[in-house]
Length: 362
Ligand SMILES: [Zn+2]
Image (cartoon, rainbow, N blue to C red):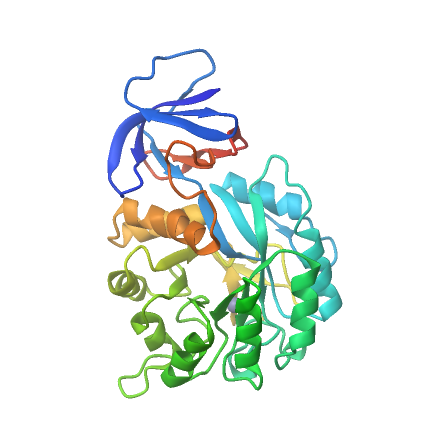
């Protein structure tokens, strides 16, 4: 039994309640204003108590990586927990299939003292060459149904990012969706109409909106226009203040609401063989200056969103409730009977505690 006593708690409807959260057996046992103090309680007065963050798109954290030589899922999971993340998708970048297989099978390794790995997000290799961003171009490939089925059979693949304009992409989308895998559109130069067709084939998500995709022009709205306009999509955005201008993040939030946007870290702090990345504040760049992902945490993304005028309740939902719902996780809401995956932020929105399955891990 654990009690987080006296915090300001985000209720499922998005309002704030002054309450204590009781945790028992890994689950939330109750949210109540009347819990008396006891030994072993966590005093969280003056703090915000939020559902733990869920990162749909993270390649590495704290110098530990998920793919390639020296990969350490527990290392990444522990670093993510220090940043308030309680569930994440182990996200790959384009690489030879054997390397992707290894990352998929490693995703089921236990992560004691860390965030839970909720499965794998395959970011490619079925991506557009001209929109590769920092993805290794030599590893990109056209859609390959058998390769995709082999990867899905190897472990819990939950999301696949692909470029829908590639040959065979629509068959691949339908095949993946039929197996319960979400398809996210990204690293793509598709037209708006191409995005509409891909959504018709079953795609439901957009990968790091604005970055590495056809931009929105008024006569040619591109994939960014689709991310704003098409109903039902869940749209990732990197809110580190460098990948996307604050006004673009705000505009996306206004267009889709907190239920339609997921904050993602796209953290690559510890990644990418043979091409050392240069740290530039909270982002990492290749030697030629190309943005190669973020070194920021999801907690920093929440702080940024609030600094840019988005209410904390909405920022928290975009970092937790919305991505949890996209993955079909029980987490993401502070309600009796839900998993006790929680993050406690202090008055400056810095992470004070992270609780995963009722255990304080950071
Ligand atoms: Zn990417």
